[in-house]
Image (tube, rainbow, N blue to C red):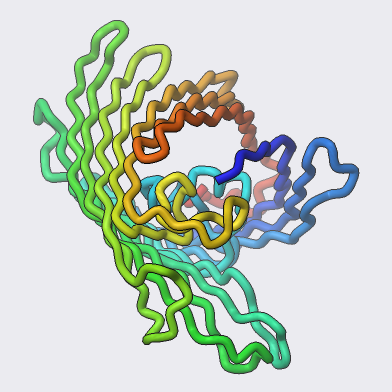
Length: 323
């Protein structure tokens, strides 16, 4: 794939209202401005309704997107934080002591009668089940993940074949707390992944199925996290996943190029600089080595995040949940 630069700002000011303590309503506007471009790239209204019941949430509208799903990068690209900051649809979330579950649908593109494009829908399930207790010296959990992307519809003018793509991932995660002054924990995880094209014979991709192996080791240190990853993919494709992991070239790469066998070594240096309770700067340095191409590549990112809420008033002195 070809390199590119993402440099700009994204703002989403909102007003929040609680008609009852368990129901949170948010409405605002999303603004996206790239540096070096005098025009706004996106101006979009946002709306979210969140109903919280204990450790469960039901969300309608702009759902909790990208990183909130807790997917591994071969299934969901980290850069979706910038490239696709909004997801619109339905979401159910469960976050208990032992179980994390996120089931979601994102309506990517709405189709209308006579449209010259297909409707597009994405969705999936992300989960984690903790096997060990709080007093165990090693924390072990089992993650299970699934994504789907569909393009189709019956009222457009294209009459193009339906495309439905599935990805699956399962593995094991182990974390050993050390509580040292510098080295605070060691985390190991391994995932097996599958790709399956369920387009019912109308295949547009060069591969109809594939698989992958994703191994990670992380040193959680006081000043930064150091992560070493190995990827081995066989005819693997995930339409929502990171470009590095695909056996089919991305649109911004070389169209039509395929690499059936992918082998990569990735090193990530990650650091969060906490400025205040509301603001933080995140730095990511990621060299990547492609064993097949014998090529060393890299990416570098700096992200400033600010999130703050100001109470403008409390009608009826209501208690609020689900923030």
